[in-house]
Image 1 (cartoon, rainbow, N blue to C red):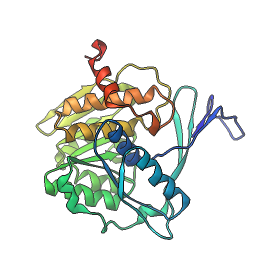
Image 2: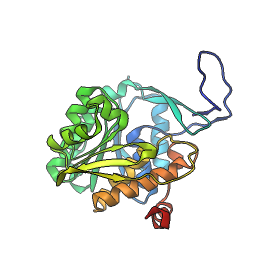
Image 3: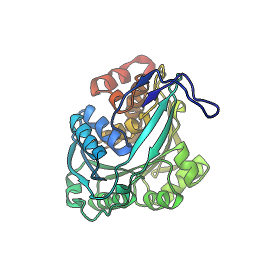
Image 4: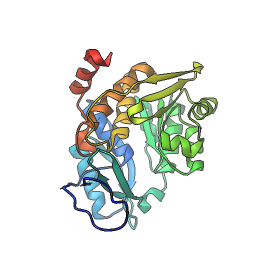
Length: 288
């Protein structure tokens, strides 16, 4: 992760005024966020057998995430990224999706799903996400999809088996184009909740119980330092709130508060807040 004053408008060299290394990835960041919020969380996923794999495992463990089912695949490569954050807190991510994401999913311990409060999957390892989401639906557990930008057929297949489909704006555009019709289409496909996160513009969602109503949770007003991993923190906090039995509106607000606090801090995963911080922000009069 590099910090710069601004992104260049053409080719050339620019100085970085900060540099650090840290864990990344949508589901991995969400898992670390859940642990920091006081939840018990296990990460399932494939890595290569390279040096990056060891860093991924060590960083997740340091964040309190169980890694018993983080599996290394010989001959494959692990995903990693270069992230550039400018003076406004906006980020540019150059991501390498390793060949480990092509690994099969038959090894996943799907029988353990019945002991979970919720399953959260992202779109990067489609085979594993599909298996986990189906198992969650079969077990009567919340099956939550982080629907970030991906190939349309991947979004289509995963959205059809999740019961909470949380799109980013870019993810929804890649899948359907228009927000409200896209959310309603996800509901028609079987989702209980379909949402789109809009950063500083908050989050909109539709519930199957009231498909004609678009709900909204405003973003918390904060001074933005770095938006990296804010969406991942949102999804982790939302999954934890759902697992705890919070109503959808309360879960959205809880997740929005967690993401807002993250945006006030530099770095990605390391900026995820603790439970006390989120509860304190929710208690502020301006947050009512």
